[in-house]
Length: 312
Image (cartoon, rainbow, N blue to C red; front, side):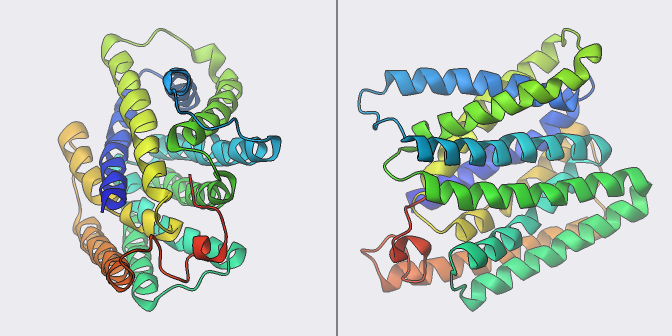
């Protein structure tokens, strides 16, 4: 139950990041946003790691390589695609396209872990994909080639996010959420700092509003969101956790309307309804599994039951 609540709270924080990022893009470039956001987050997480008296042993070299790679995929690569995609598209499109990510994670799990997917979960993921198709189709019709390109970049970000989930599952044995998130954020911040040099000619001091929003992105969305998500992900299959993140589109569209004043077309509203249905199916399947095995953290067909370390 607490794992589900943690992932849902992460979804709430992350859903606001699309509208907030859209606001900050008026003053700061997409790569520089990532560099500032995740450098601040890495510093905060470093302090938390140092203050933790019961911190686990430092990851071994192999674990660190895997954690750094997952952080590069899930932070640098994913957020480069997200920030540029949001810049070309809209915050509401970005929020809704997240619905395709469970399908990508599910397929990657099938290849890497040979995980058996129950029918309700597969159905829920496919429903979410149909909703995302409605969003991308709407973007191409309304916003032209630029918005369509942004939507495609956001879809590609899902591949990076799937790699982050699956690779992180293999790399976190013996580590707590703070330690794992710190190592991943450190790698992501380093990648963004290098990428932000491409925008060096456009650097300028952001205004007070943009600065406060950057702090919000770092503290709430990066540190808070990733800690909550990693806590939940340690206790459930990655495809289930990512399916819960389909709530991000619902929260995100509300944020896009309230913060940015964006309008929602009927196709997007229909996609949102389909997304909610997909989340409900995925959650029903998980609750049934938990009821059947009240003392087990996962149903027998999950990777952890087969001896694979639990996730971040």
